[in-house]
Length: 91
Image (cartoon, rainbow, N blue to C red):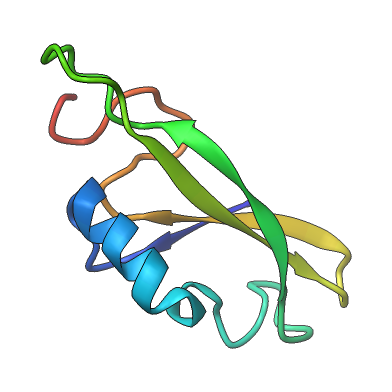
């Protein structure tokens, strides 16, 4: 399952908010409605696939775990579409 965090419209803004206010990425409860979710690590994603002669940014995507339904989910910023290699602006 993927949650979209609204209001983050660029990769630089995502990196800045992840460093300064990482708690804002965790919702109050799971979409199933059971319990407060736990941080379950993160994974990297190469979301910046524009070939501008610069190395691609490795973006950290937080993962969460719900002890109620025993499922994990990821929290993506609004600028990164789920299950896609390219940003919204490229598509």
